[in-house]
Amino acid sequence: MNAISKSETTSPKKPDSRQEQRAAQRAANEDRARKMHAARMETALDCLPGLEAESRVEEPPALNVGCSGWYYREWKGKFYPESIPSGRWFDHYADQFQTVELNAPFYSWPTVDTVKTWLRQAGPRRFVYTVKVCELITHVKRFRDTGELVEDFGYIATLLEEHMGCFLFQMPPGYDFTADRLKRILSQLDPARRNVVEFRHPSWWNEKVYDAFRETGAIFCSCSAPGLPDEMVNTSGEVYLRFHGATKWYLYNYSTAELERWRDRVIRSGARRVWAYFNNTMDGSAVDNARQFRDLCLAGS
Image (cartoon, rainbow, N blue to C red; front, top):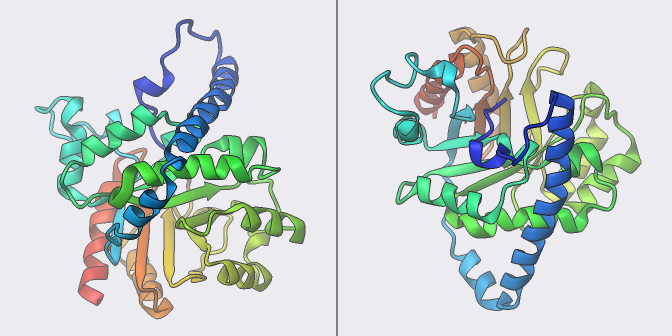
């Protein structure tokens, strides 16, 4: 979960209902995707120098632990001091963590200007964004003929350069496993990007899926969430964990013992790089759990 920034939700006329607002937002995503495609094509005119520059981008750290979003009003007084305005919240967050998982792009395809704002926010810090891919690809079209859209969304990585982490493709809960769906997803991912796929249906936790992910280098997202297999899966040498709440979505406080079990799984996986994000954001537990998990991983390395 994540709050959606004002710049991504402001419209001339406020919709009458949440359903109308979501419909308007989805329509806007189509338009924003076209504009990002145009920007990508313009950049592609100078393709070779761009590729050379991208090859020099610094690799992310071996351990990346943070929260799923950072702009939560509920965190004021708990994580953000009462004395600082919301305009300084990102700086406060970035003083504590080196990475964040941006969920707002799932609902609203970001503009080029929005991505440049992320870049300015990161500044000279060694800060890495993981970006959740827009639902236009995963929930509306469900990977049906979305290869070009995936490339267009991938332009975000070109803009962010060394501040880019992973692209997170979250699939719908009712989207169960079939061989055709597996092939459809993996065939449209850009191998030049760091791609993570999160499934919300337990049928995807099987060896056929893991083998296909290993062949393409895609990262299978391991989850701590109600109704999903409680397993660590390593398909690429990098592991990606999302902590939604072991028994209740978004509202859960992980115990030290639970975090130690996940730390031990990370160690046993032999992964060379770890991405872990806490999405139990409703009461601010994500912040404390992320800090503790990071410290446990550092102590165990």
